[in-house]
Length: 137
Image (tube, rainbow, N blue to C red; front, top):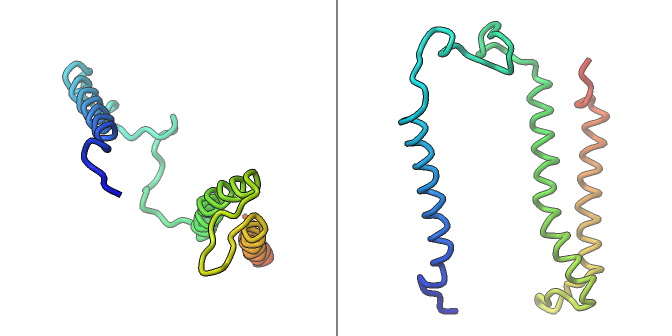
């Protein structure tokens, strides 16, 4: 497959326009924006609440566990999305997606693979639940 720069020209134009707009907004904001400085303007503002304590303080380990579990189950969607697209294409067309070394990848194969993936995630979810990772007390 022979590709030239002309094939990528629309993408390059779009990236150029986006970069120009970002630079223009930054320059205009700096040029015509307000320049008032002071103790109140420079103070930390977090959701309308005054700053209390040090931001470098210790946090309960449960916050980290919830963050890691969120990432784990959020990444699940990244793997399920392409699977769902392939499964839909195979189910609608009624034809296999591909044949790899004699193995036919059709909707049944995809359904079993997706089911096993979800079962493994369910086992991990139940394990975390029984270990108490979702309890806050």
